[in-house]
Length: 417
Image 1: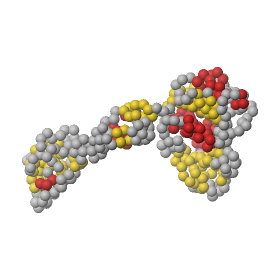
Image 2: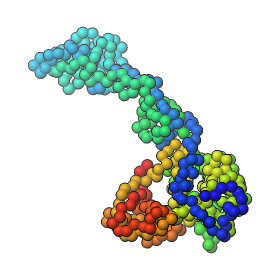
Image 3: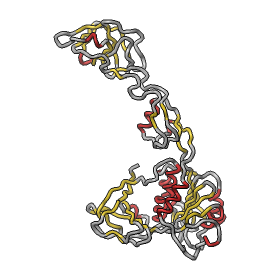
Image 4: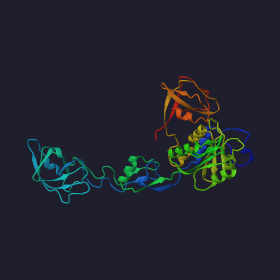
């Protein structure tokens, strides 16, 4: 790991003298990625957001006793003895509908026609299901008894006033949002989503749809990163394509408005790789060079409170460095779990996976007859390998690889959240 802004940080055309271990890098990220402040979010935009504080219900739900069945509200004790051969009759004195309660009080020998969800009238304490009753001339005959409180949903059955219905740090699912709405929450306190700026650097980069000159390539990384940022709960503040110019990279890196800056390209040891030196000059280059494959030229640091991630230009390296480092920071800043949103399971190895002691390997694999096999293409520029692969496995720094029959943890590219 490196820090400061002295000339020894300039690795252009020299190479890295040392590389940080992945565990060290993640430790730095976890220390620096403190959840952002809270803000009020409208209930219609609350799905997927992370609560900044507990939400306590100010009401009972429901706020009244209500019918759990369609039928007749009456006094349960008066139905004792009712049966097919001893039908009891009650006078129907009105009806209670959802949102429109019966205004009177049920007296002895009376019943009120009632629908599911409607308020139980004063004086009644049970609901007789409609299938056990028959009406004729404002009278209802019943053929079974119901005990007091039968088919009555009591006040506060769902939520009681004063109950914490959603705790701080909870990521809101659709049913959570529904529950918050049911207690009248028009807004909820949510952790602010990280604002992320993407800077795609390189004289050779052009945007899809623009004219491409000889030896230029279309920008894939910024579009891939935009989707990853959205997946991890960030908000795209801006996305710019920049030439290999120290001044242009500096101006874009220090401009206000972003919590996180992702620089793709220009992070390695080439003569035109300006981003690391800009970061060192304007803030802190905390880490540059990581013991992993791909993504070894990745780096990161800070400008004030802003986190800056230097992602390699090769697309697979860019994806890998984002997933390992930048995505972790964005999730933590937004109050989410640091862990990957990928399904994982233990799978046997079908064909040997080769690695080297001292570095962590990110290996794209396919599932073949229930086993993982490494893809034949290993280049960090072969983005199509990530679409042909079913997922990836991680080989730790302590391993030289995994022989056939060994077990590895397989991460599936298809998302679980």
